[in-house]
Image 1: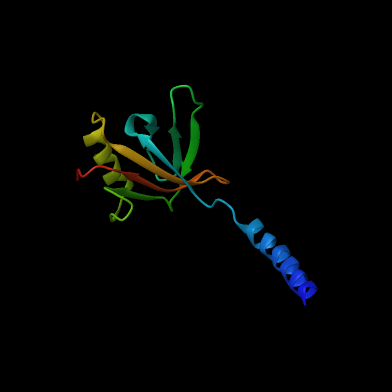
Image 2: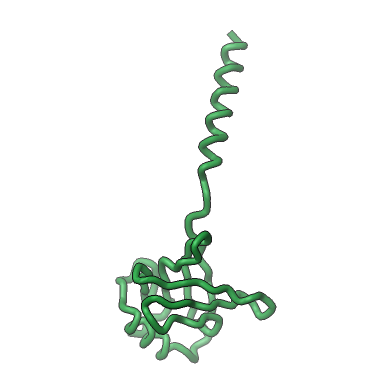
Length: 119
């Protein structure tokens, strides 16, 4: 009876290893100060972020699928033009953060969120 349990356990471990091998990072989110992000000018453009003073800049890409939000991740979507207006209003504020969600494999940005309450 104990041999049967060992066989079942061995088979379970083999299959569970295969399941864990499928897990991968789908999206990464960066939390940045507004001054550390060069935001896009156009719907399809690049975004340059600097995670620290000594770090090499990271180049990411916005597409027509990129979502812009003001206030938080559950805030309504806004247009790039409205997003840029919010950024202009908050450019000199230190406490404003920007969250950039992107796919590491493609470097395509899925969403950019500014933590401001400005309209």
